[in-house]
Length: 310
Image (cartoon, rainbow, N blue to C red; front, side, top):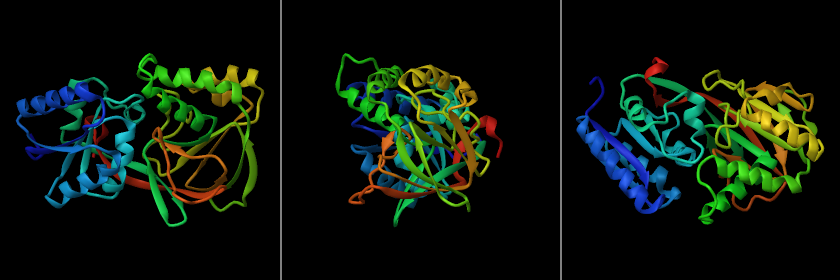
């Protein structure tokens, strides 16, 4: 094996209950069978994810496996951006859109092969700044209708009769349609003057997918140094219902009420909350409307990916 025989695995021990604990033990055993010495990093809160990673980095960690979904990746980014740590992903989340966007496997054995292999690729990360506060985005930053769907889908976790997995986003989408309305945004692309723009939703993509497989930014490339901005213009509920199913295949971008732009920097002002990687972004006491500056950090994240080259 070309890489070091010691590996760190981070899991959120509060996620998944007994099933999550059992899954973690199985993962550690499988890595041990492959000849690795495993340092298990446990966290009971997403707020501690970056702390645990930084602690491991000070002890010389060079390879980290994240056993979780897009949310765990999101909370790990502050400790991984522009670091020397290569991260492998074993996706056990709801949406797993980061893996989907990079073409990483979702089956355990194949995911472990990828996560522990010697080949890596450099992946862009989005940076969103509100004043002096900075957050990072691996997949898609979004607001408007899509943000409301994210919130409802997360609330459904507490309802045991609601199906798990990506279907939760579909149910949340249907539930939110009754309150569909356009949201005002002010957008300034790169060095262009700001424009006032109303849209049902806005999605700023580092990768193509959000919401458990919806190709909202189908042309987004994770290592091109640019972001793709997709908006659905103000439309009737009937039109939105016709357009929305096309998002799963990416064919919605052919509709006349859908616009696409590509840029490297975007200043956007909105009254709505922002969501990234399925997580609501908290900017503390900042009052709406919030002006955010979104930029691309080229190659800021190193991901273990056998098919990705170096």
